[in-house]
Length: 88
Image (cartoon, rainbow, N blue to C red; front, side, top):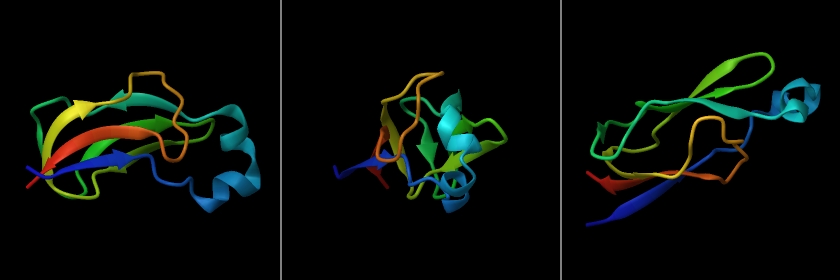
């Protein structure tokens, strides 16, 4: 079985330039998967909350969720491990 760890992508460039979102933190507002779920590419994994917007983070590939590495309210920095998938 091949596995793949999905990590938090880099923040959009606009977050760094305006400062409003990144300076106040980015938090996990909703986790939309749990171990055992089967995902297709682009299915939402979680929702981030910033000062201005909620943003869904999609799965970059298809597979079955083996483990969720984050909790509600966690800060989400680029590179943070989110989930581990067994690749389809």
